[in-house]
Image (cartoon, rainbow, N blue to C red; front, side, top):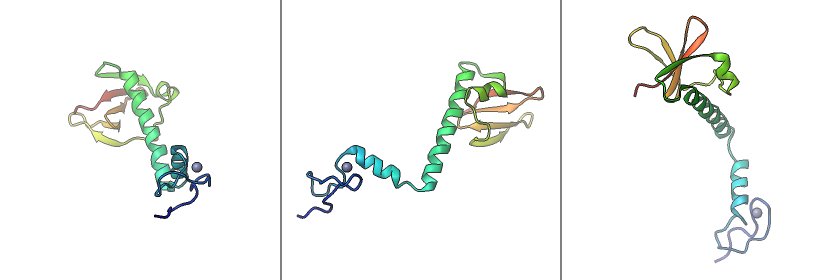
Length: 121
Ligand SMILES: [Zn+2]
């Protein structure tokens, strides 16, 4: 059986392995895939990264507590980006809007602080 590719699709080095080999190394394979990602995939990855960081900031400030109030500036200082959220839920009792990043969220208080919470379920 003839080789499908003579040379690495990424670095053009001559291939010597299996006949269906396309890359000389895993490094070249990953590099090639990264290069060929669509803009949508890149945007998705970039936003997911921000969301994960936001989730981690909320998780870190809340710790073992059920809820805690903090100045939004302090969250931002820790890397939180309040432009990126996953969903909004209205609380049943008082109708507050809770802004969520996956399972952690917050609501804005009248005094300018935010109340950080973990999702109920
Ligand atoms: Zn290569």
